[in-house]
Image (cartoon, rainbow, N blue to C red):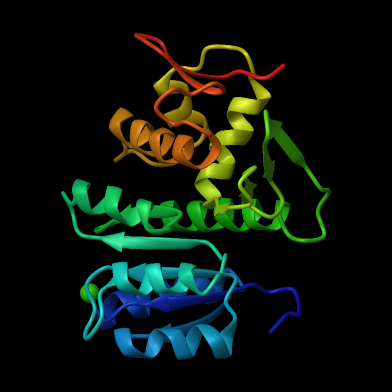
Length: 234
Ligand code: CA
């Protein structure tokens, strides 16, 4: 195994899919660990310290939501890509709200999954601890894009998901300009065809609750009716 290979933890109970995933990922030089029982996931996370996790939603003993939520509660920040059955739009929103970074709907193409894994790992890597410190100040709120944390003036701290950091980065690179929901879908949700503008709204709303002092009267992450959103900075 090459020293620089990334570890991927596959949590999936369907043997044929596990076989395909393991085979494909190992062919791409990833180190693969497989768990098929919901109850075994946390032990595997602790012993493996994966760089990324592929997490099926429906598993024996515990479901993917519970697992995802617990992993985030324990402050593990590696990207989580959830696997879900077709037509589970509501489940997607729930999953993203509890800390999954990405979604892929079964049945999916191996190339698409590989593209998303590469994108997630590249993103996680760009924001590793060794990267340059980048602090964005929105009034009295400080956003540390390296640590994915928001520091509020009342001393509370909010954690940002990988996706939320990407949204901020994209808005920041186009600060003080109107950005449409379609722009966000294209630039932030790159490879995903199953998302829609509601996905964007859900994320913006959650992000706003984290970065605005008064989310109902936002000063920085503003809505432009009929247009989209804008990050207002000085
Ligand atoms: Ca399953």
